[in-house]
Length: 81
Image (cartoon, rainbow, N blue to C red; front, top):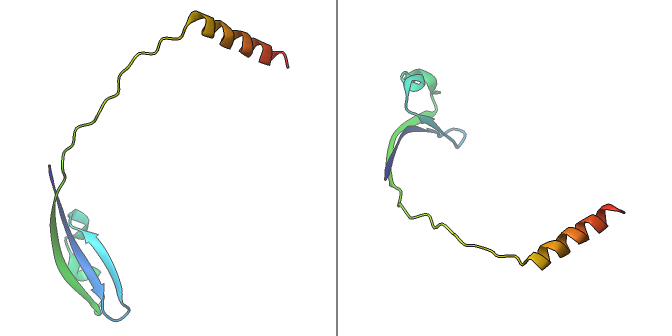
């Protein structure tokens, strides 16, 4: 699977700050959103995301009847406190 990221990196050379503005409807007028000390860098990145199988664990547990009775008796005895 491939994911594409498109944005502008805005570098402020005066203060040493950096911000990222994602490309989209809200960022159409990029020139009006930057300060005179900011430089706009057009940024596109394609990321290949590896697909891997999800392992499922399955099993069965058998609890002997005597153990179940022991657990129930212990839980009832604990309720009397």
